[in-house]
Length: 433
Image (cartoon, rainbow, N blue to C red; front, side):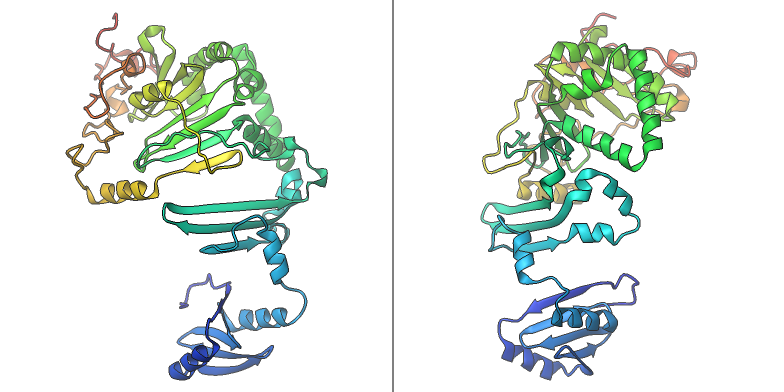
């Protein structure tokens, strides 16, 4: 059960249902006896050290760890059953797995993590309890993190307080995530950064002020502060993703987004991300595409009162018209939802190159442009590949049909050869040139 690896810092215990049969097993296997500790006999068998006492068998990565664990269990300074059960209070008692962790002690004992205690919520964290319950319809995972809340306010929490669950995008074979009030997470991360690294946060805050002046808007108020509703995201096993976030004031958010979009190419180059190209749907639409020379692109915009972002235009168009669904059994500000069976089928099908009856060639029916044999032109040739933004402005064809990917190769004198490329996306069919 153990090998020569250095990572052998562990202790585990198993309770046998029949003490007599456990003794019989030890007699049959005839391990080498190495003495006793705290009333338990210690054995070694082919590099594995373990101890047996009554109906318990205890394993450890080394004999030293094993003896130390047995002596602690025989004393008073150890985890007891009452503490364990208290940490899992409110979670199912009959579960496939039950997990307890003293997070406060782990942080205090780690030199690398001690700086995190400058964050008020981290300082208040005490224990983690988690369970996994298997049922006919899947595996339900529940957890709670207990804190000393006497000095905490709702604003100090990493996620929004309360039991109300956000809605999610439920799609076959995909992972759905819902977050209520994502602005709370951003504000927590900023507060944590300020507490742990004041100098670094100062540079970050100054950069935001500079950007505010360039945009003639407030990043905090006009962008982050707008994201107080539900955020719903979905992702496929092949890397396609989409995000749909409700905003407080869509008109204001749209104006701010237009200003942000105009400076994104220069910001990307200035940050070392390399050249990117920006295109606006029909030159005046509400959606934008931002692409790199290797063909990676994101499409984003505002539609039906929500901010939409995806890495293909078809997915963005669907998100613009789609309404997330409620998850009846979920509670809390963060929800993760997936059909485990269909998700596994997609993973296994993709790995094996399986063919789907609905889509010859093994393409997932809800990822109609996921698989493509085309390769993005290299930047050295002076070409960018941007998605067809027409998909974001009309109903388009059914998901079961193919969607072509439009690109063009520019000549050596093309504008896309400039350090800051101008228009590099071809005019979609039906649009004025």
